[in-house]
Length: 333
Image (cartoon, rainbow, N blue to C red; front, top):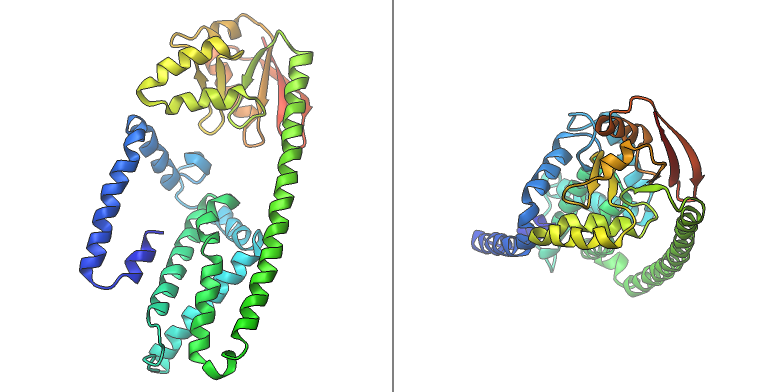
């Protein structure tokens, strides 16, 4: 997104001032996270140098197979974005063709800034598509989603100026029709998402109630993103800066679980400063693991074996909800 003003602004002085203030405000905004800056930099390094999500996977900058699959997902999961991007691309390519090949003079365009805005939007969208295709999730492309309508509108304005006689009379009707259709579509999407969220919430609570009723005495190990109100509180404490240990101490006294599993890095996260959770696990006390659909039970088992010394660790699925989150009973020998 930083490229958009860089391309639109005229003159090196304006571009320099823009970058200067970006740097100042970046430093100001990142101050609350300075305490975790090493964690953040390691995470970014993993994103760049490894092929899996959140810095996981093999040391491969780009996996051609997953990249091509993700590239297809970028365009098939949101049709409006695909239409907008290829419209912007077509308009951009036509302008290049007309200027470089046909040697056309675009001085008749009343608003030359439109071509710079189009170039900026196309550059930002393309760069983000490349980045997201490395580690795909639909919500990662949200910044470019926000450019979809603007890209369509700028393309439309440029086409109107290139061919004023053909589009001028119908401009308002076409624009009103497109906007009405989009408003209806987005309204439908919002309502659908609302009811989908209610269903997911009910499904999550069913899992919590099932565990509390059937396994009140078990050691529960929630994972990041699992249907457990304790998990987000515990994981949020790692972002508490210099107050981290204070909050962890408060949470330890209030929450049922004091050991959690972070499936993004395949590590346990402890609330106590001197955790006795490992001793509890070694005692043979029955254990339940709540694992979201993004976690790997095999990775968990390997890590559990590493910290407890148990070589024979078995598991069985006792509950799976509609969100593909599972509860496992862990048996150690």
